[in-house]
Length: 461
Image 1 (tube, one colour):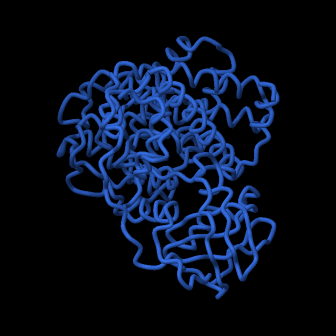
Image 2: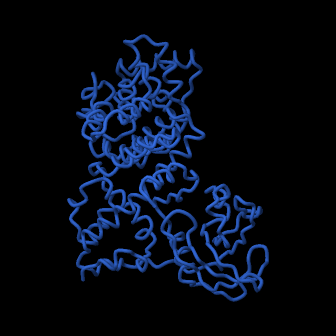
Image 3: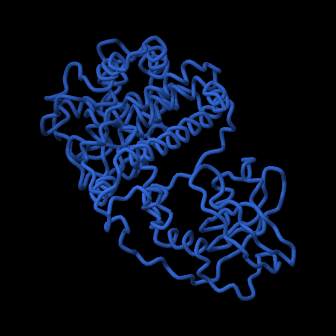
């Protein structure tokens, strides 16, 4: 297939055909996968949940790409052979939670393997086919946390490692793009861009409260209020909106903020007026996390940074501004300078912000966080907009730029992986490699599936 044909196929892909995300798997989830793979359970008297006799001839091959978990499995149900794909879940309700009933790629599933049958409804594919469900005999053996086989290697061939990680980076980027594309069918683009920005600002521990905040205080509502606010009062009004809706102005002593100051009192006065005029409400009991987080990453700092970022764009909307920028510029360095100005560089009061009890630093967000914003939000959003508008050059440009991003945050998980393989972290010199390593670790290392590791044949012993 020619490159252009492949790009058009990606633009016209079925948007629900997306891998399930699993940033971390429990021991039980790992065990379920390996239990089916190795058939390490009693096969005497196996029955589906609707009382059909079943024998497993072959578990199939584990699929490490999109779609069902195992392909080309062979089972016998009531004496009849069936060959096809197998999907694995902890609970049978996960079939509907992950929306497999809306995705035609799951029409090929012949068996649904679960640990717990917790739904009374049949498991149906998009075409209406009923999929039998097998509950693995309980308790199945929990996977023993074995030492990684790669610890015995001296290293791994770097060029082959890089090729493998780049392949998985492509899979990861395409999945992110398709996820955004699907979301844009039900979420207005500017609100989605705003949600994605808050997700990045939330970091790992505060993603959920930032998401809830974005849902409660939409960007359309923010802009409506700013449009009715005098120019000189817009920034402080926006801070009042964010801190008030987040619940920080409803308590006597907001965490990590300077207390008993005229500035806090002023924000509260503005917030009370906003509540009266626009029927605003704070989101009670949001699970904000401060413990174990550097002060620069505290959610209160990130909210103040968000206020400055949004004011950089106002009265334009940030999503449209980003699309205009990437459409009009081919050079990544120029695009990066624009993004740095919009998302990193403070204007006015920041380093000595009256809300902070300690200096606020020189940047709104760090360089590595900006790179992650490119890889996880900005470029997938641009690709998805290109897809929705059938703008192939925009989607292609976003894909090309994804390979040029400098390294972002390197998680502890990836550091452990590179240490096991005796790979110098400095060689992970672009975010595409890092993203590929994250995807690879999710599919193999996190599941303890050493025997399926594609790097084994490149090991230096």
